[in-house]
Amino acid sequence: MNSAEKDTLIALVEQGPLWDGDVPSKRGRDALIQAGFAVRVLVKGSDGWQAATYRGRDAYKALFPNPDGSIPDLIRQAKANRMGAHD
Image 1 (cartoon, rainbow, N blue to C red):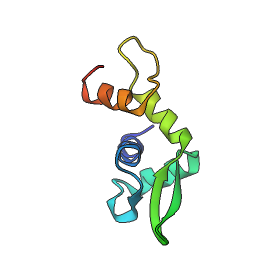
Image 2: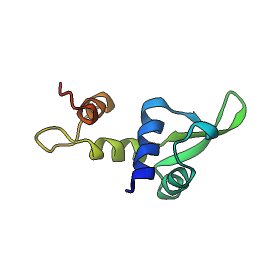
Image 3: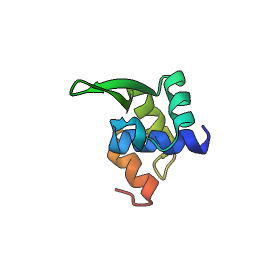
């Protein structure tokens, strides 16, 4: 996964769904959609939004493993790993 895809996946998982103008990278978004890590969604009847899929969630967790190398069970654990804080 390149940096644009990674930055976009982080944003979608941690802050999503995101309106198209708030996505860090359009190319990253397109690649994530093509890989099944993100989808276009409606939010309160409006189009132009993207969200992570469960496959995207799993990819996010795999990007930020626990100190022992295992994949975190929870997104909050993976986020803590990404930020350098461990539970």
